[in-house]
Picture 1 (cartoon, rainbow, N blue to C red):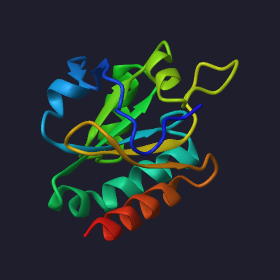
Picture 2 (tube, helix red, strand yellow; picture 1 turned 60 degrees about the vertical axis):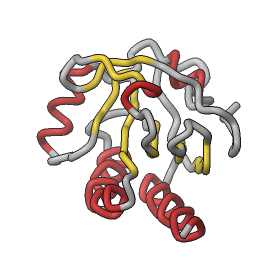
Picture 3 (cartoon, helix red, strand yellow; picture 1 turned 180 degrees about the horizontal axis):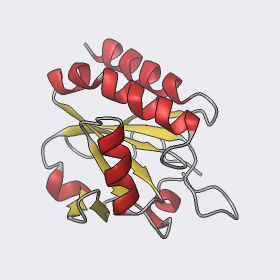
Picture 4 (tube, helix red, strand yellow; picture 1 turned 90 degrees about the horizontal axis):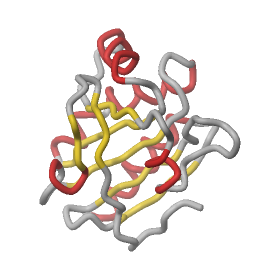
Length: 151
C-alpha cells in the first residue's frame, strides 16, 4: 500500500549511480524533492519518463525541488542509463526492493518497483502522491499540476 499525503516520508539509505550513499533525511535536509519509483532502466516507458523529468528538470530546480529516481537496477546500470540519456538528477539503487516496499512501490512477486511518484516537502512530509503504471509522463504532469496548486 502506498503512503498518503500528509504522512512522514520514511527515511532510507541507498547507493546512487556513483555507488555513494544517499540518505533521504541527511541529503534532503531542508529541501523538497520528488521521489519517483520506476520498474527498469532502458525500457521504453521508463526511458520516456526519465527523459520527461530531464526535460522539465529546470522547472523543478527553479523551485528548489530535487528529482530522484529509484529502481531495483544496480549503480552501474544507473550510470549507463544516466549517461546515455543525459539525466541531470540522482538515480538510486534499491536492489533488494526494500525501499520500494516501504513506499508501497514494490510489485508483488517481482523484484521491481511499480511506477509511483512522491512529492516530499522540506520537512519530509508527503505533499503529493501519483500512481500510474502505464503512463510515466503523466507523473511529470501530475507533479507540475501540484506545484501550480501550491503557488
